[in-house]
Length: 224
Image (tube, helix red, strand yellow):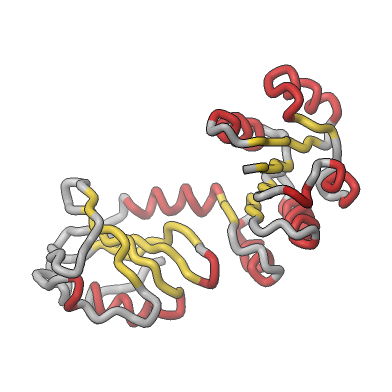
Protein backbone atom coordinates (compact mmCIF):
# COMPACT_ATOMS: atom_id res chain seq x y z
CA UNK A 1 0.00 0.00 0.00
CA UNK A 2 0.99 3.60 -0.53
CA UNK A 3 0.15 5.53 2.64
CA UNK A 4 0.53 9.24 3.28
CA UNK A 5 0.89 10.22 6.94
CA UNK A 6 0.19 13.92 7.50
CA UNK A 7 1.82 15.10 10.72
CA UNK A 8 5.34 14.39 11.86
CA UNK A 9 4.89 14.44 15.63
CA UNK A 10 5.40 11.43 17.87
CA UNK A 11 2.19 9.82 16.61
CA UNK A 12 3.11 10.31 12.96
CA UNK A 13 6.68 9.12 13.41
CA UNK A 14 5.64 6.00 15.31
CA UNK A 15 2.90 5.20 12.82
CA UNK A 16 5.18 5.65 9.82
CA UNK A 17 7.88 3.47 11.35
CA UNK A 18 5.44 0.63 12.00
CA UNK A 19 3.92 0.87 8.53
CA UNK A 20 7.34 0.82 6.89
CA UNK A 21 8.26 -2.31 8.81
CA UNK A 22 5.20 -3.88 7.22
CA UNK A 23 6.72 -3.25 3.77
CA UNK A 24 4.30 -0.45 2.92
CA UNK A 25 5.36 2.58 0.89
CA UNK A 26 5.01 5.51 3.30
CA UNK A 27 5.45 9.25 2.97
CA UNK A 28 5.27 11.55 5.99
CA UNK A 29 4.28 15.18 5.46
CA UNK A 30 5.58 17.60 8.08
CA UNK A 31 4.93 21.35 8.02
CA UNK A 32 8.00 22.34 10.05
CA UNK A 33 11.13 22.08 7.85
CA UNK A 34 13.41 21.59 10.85
CA UNK A 35 11.27 18.75 12.17
CA UNK A 36 11.07 17.21 8.68
CA UNK A 37 14.87 17.28 8.40
CA UNK A 38 15.16 15.64 11.81
CA UNK A 39 12.75 12.88 10.79
CA UNK A 40 14.58 12.37 7.50
CA UNK A 41 17.64 11.32 9.49
CA UNK A 42 15.57 8.36 10.70
CA UNK A 43 13.19 7.68 7.81
CA UNK A 44 15.25 8.85 4.84
CA UNK A 45 13.37 9.77 1.67
CA UNK A 46 10.03 8.86 3.28
CA UNK A 47 9.71 12.40 4.67
CA UNK A 48 8.58 15.51 2.80
CA UNK A 49 8.49 19.04 4.18
CA UNK A 50 5.16 20.65 3.39
CA UNK A 51 1.73 21.60 4.68
CA UNK A 52 -0.75 18.78 4.23
CA UNK A 53 -3.61 21.29 4.39
CA UNK A 54 -2.53 22.61 0.99
CA UNK A 55 -3.84 20.74 -2.03
CA UNK A 56 -0.65 21.45 -3.97
CA UNK A 57 1.42 19.74 -1.26
CA UNK A 58 -0.76 16.64 -1.30
CA UNK A 59 -0.62 16.59 -5.10
CA UNK A 60 3.17 16.74 -4.96
CA UNK A 61 3.10 13.86 -2.49
CA UNK A 62 1.22 11.73 -5.02
CA UNK A 63 -2.09 11.71 -3.20
CA UNK A 64 -3.92 10.61 -6.35
CA UNK A 65 -2.31 7.17 -6.13
CA UNK A 66 -2.49 6.83 -2.34
CA UNK A 67 -4.41 3.89 -0.90
CA UNK A 68 -4.77 5.61 2.45
CA UNK A 69 -4.21 9.03 4.00
CA UNK A 70 -3.82 9.28 7.77
CA UNK A 71 -4.12 12.81 9.18
CA UNK A 72 -2.54 12.71 12.64
CA UNK A 73 -1.52 16.30 13.37
CA UNK A 74 -2.28 17.87 16.74
CA UNK A 75 -4.96 20.12 15.21
CA UNK A 76 -8.43 18.69 14.52
CA UNK A 77 -9.27 21.36 11.94
CA UNK A 78 -6.10 20.57 9.98
CA UNK A 79 -6.86 16.84 10.09
CA UNK A 80 -10.36 17.47 8.73
CA UNK A 81 -9.05 19.63 5.88
CA UNK A 82 -6.38 17.08 4.97
CA UNK A 83 -8.93 14.26 4.80
CA UNK A 84 -11.36 16.33 2.73
CA UNK A 85 -8.68 17.25 0.20
CA UNK A 86 -7.57 13.61 -0.01
CA UNK A 87 -11.15 12.46 -0.62
CA UNK A 88 -11.57 15.12 -3.32
CA UNK A 89 -8.51 13.65 -5.03
CA UNK A 90 -10.08 10.18 -5.09
CA UNK A 91 -8.47 8.59 -2.04
CA UNK A 92 -10.80 5.78 -0.97
CA UNK A 93 -9.85 5.65 2.68
CA UNK A 94 -8.88 8.35 5.14
CA UNK A 95 -8.21 8.16 8.87
CA UNK A 96 -8.25 11.22 11.11
CA UNK A 97 -6.83 11.71 14.58
CA UNK A 98 -9.25 13.60 16.81
CA UNK A 99 -7.76 15.42 19.76
CA UNK A 100 -11.08 16.67 21.12
CA UNK A 101 -13.78 13.94 21.19
CA UNK A 102 -16.46 16.63 20.89
CA UNK A 103 -15.38 17.14 17.27
CA UNK A 104 -16.12 13.55 16.27
CA UNK A 105 -19.67 14.29 15.11
CA UNK A 106 -18.39 17.05 12.82
CA UNK A 107 -16.01 14.61 11.15
CA UNK A 108 -18.86 12.11 10.63
CA UNK A 109 -21.09 14.77 9.11
CA UNK A 110 -18.32 15.68 6.67
CA UNK A 111 -17.97 12.05 5.61
CA UNK A 112 -14.80 11.16 7.56
CA UNK A 113 -16.07 7.98 9.19
CA UNK A 114 -12.80 6.49 10.46
CA UNK A 115 -11.53 8.56 13.37
CA UNK A 116 -9.16 7.80 16.23
CA UNK A 117 -9.42 9.58 19.57
CA UNK A 118 -6.82 8.88 22.24
CA UNK A 119 -9.19 10.25 24.88
CA UNK A 120 -11.96 7.88 23.83
CA UNK A 121 -9.56 4.93 23.75
CA UNK A 122 -8.30 5.67 27.26
CA UNK A 123 -11.86 6.03 28.57
CA UNK A 124 -12.77 2.68 27.02
CA UNK A 125 -9.86 1.03 28.82
CA UNK A 126 -10.93 2.57 32.12
CA UNK A 127 -14.55 1.54 31.58
CA UNK A 128 -13.48 -2.07 31.06
CA UNK A 129 -12.34 -2.11 34.68
CA UNK A 130 -15.67 -0.79 35.96
CA UNK A 131 -18.21 -3.56 36.66
CA UNK A 132 -21.16 -1.18 36.10
CA UNK A 133 -20.24 -0.72 32.44
CA UNK A 134 -21.66 -3.75 30.65
CA UNK A 135 -21.63 -2.23 27.15
CA UNK A 136 -18.51 -0.46 25.91
CA UNK A 137 -17.95 1.13 22.50
CA UNK A 138 -14.69 -0.21 21.03
CA UNK A 139 -14.57 1.11 17.47
CA UNK A 140 -16.65 3.02 14.93
CA UNK A 141 -16.84 1.35 11.53
CA UNK A 142 -18.06 2.39 8.09
CA UNK A 143 -21.76 2.68 7.31
CA UNK A 144 -22.77 3.77 10.80
CA UNK A 145 -21.79 0.44 12.38
CA UNK A 146 -19.95 0.21 15.70
CA UNK A 147 -18.07 -2.50 17.54
CA UNK A 148 -19.19 -3.01 21.15
CA UNK A 149 -17.99 -5.20 23.98
CA UNK A 150 -20.93 -6.59 25.96
CA UNK A 151 -20.42 -8.46 29.22
CA UNK A 152 -23.11 -11.00 29.97
CA UNK A 153 -24.32 -11.00 33.59
CA UNK A 154 -25.36 -14.28 35.19
CA UNK A 155 -28.98 -13.13 34.83
CA UNK A 156 -28.69 -12.56 31.07
CA UNK A 157 -31.62 -14.08 29.14
CA UNK A 158 -29.18 -15.67 26.66
CA UNK A 159 -27.08 -17.59 29.22
CA UNK A 160 -27.12 -21.25 28.25
CA UNK A 161 -28.43 -20.54 24.75
CA UNK A 162 -26.68 -21.18 21.46
CA UNK A 163 -25.78 -18.19 19.30
CA UNK A 164 -28.28 -19.29 16.65
CA UNK A 165 -31.05 -19.00 19.26
CA UNK A 166 -30.30 -15.38 20.13
CA UNK A 167 -32.56 -12.84 18.44
CA UNK A 168 -30.41 -9.79 17.61
CA UNK A 169 -31.44 -6.46 16.06
CA UNK A 170 -31.14 -6.16 12.25
CA UNK A 171 -27.56 -5.87 10.91
CA UNK A 172 -26.11 -7.07 14.21
CA UNK A 173 -23.58 -9.87 14.59
CA UNK A 174 -21.73 -11.56 17.45
CA UNK A 175 -18.18 -11.52 16.09
CA UNK A 176 -16.21 -12.87 19.07
CA UNK A 177 -16.82 -14.54 22.44
CA UNK A 178 -14.26 -14.13 25.23
CA UNK A 179 -14.77 -16.36 28.26
CA UNK A 180 -14.20 -15.08 31.84
CA UNK A 181 -10.66 -16.49 31.73
CA UNK A 182 -9.81 -14.32 28.75
CA UNK A 183 -9.80 -17.04 26.07
CA UNK A 184 -11.31 -15.79 22.78
CA UNK A 185 -13.23 -17.95 20.31
CA UNK A 186 -14.94 -17.29 17.02
CA UNK A 187 -18.58 -18.26 17.57
CA UNK A 188 -20.56 -20.62 15.42
CA UNK A 189 -24.29 -21.15 15.45
CA UNK A 190 -23.97 -23.85 18.14
CA UNK A 191 -21.68 -21.86 20.46
CA UNK A 192 -23.20 -21.70 23.95
CA UNK A 193 -23.13 -18.42 25.85
CA UNK A 194 -22.30 -18.30 29.55
CA UNK A 195 -22.54 -15.74 32.31
CA UNK A 196 -19.36 -13.66 32.46
CA UNK A 197 -18.65 -14.04 28.75
CA UNK A 198 -17.65 -10.85 26.92
CA UNK A 199 -19.18 -10.61 23.46
CA UNK A 200 -17.77 -8.41 20.70
CA UNK A 201 -20.82 -7.36 18.70
CA UNK A 202 -21.19 -5.34 15.50
CA UNK A 203 -24.35 -3.23 15.46
CA UNK A 204 -25.83 0.23 14.83
CA UNK A 205 -25.84 2.62 17.79
CA UNK A 206 -29.57 3.21 17.32
CA UNK A 207 -30.06 -0.53 17.94
CA UNK A 208 -28.34 -0.48 21.34
CA UNK A 209 -31.51 -0.46 23.40
CA UNK A 210 -32.81 -3.58 21.63
CA UNK A 211 -29.39 -5.19 21.88
CA UNK A 212 -29.16 -4.45 25.59
CA UNK A 213 -32.54 -6.01 26.27
CA UNK A 214 -31.69 -9.06 24.17
CA UNK A 215 -28.29 -9.77 25.75
CA UNK A 216 -28.37 -8.18 29.20
CA UNK A 217 -32.03 -7.91 30.11
CA UNK A 218 -34.37 -5.04 30.91
CA UNK A 219 -33.33 -4.74 34.57
CA UNK A 220 -29.77 -3.58 33.83
CA UNK A 221 -28.59 -0.05 32.99
CA UNK A 222 -27.02 0.94 29.72
CA UNK A 223 -23.58 2.56 29.91
CA UNK A 224 -21.79 3.50 26.71
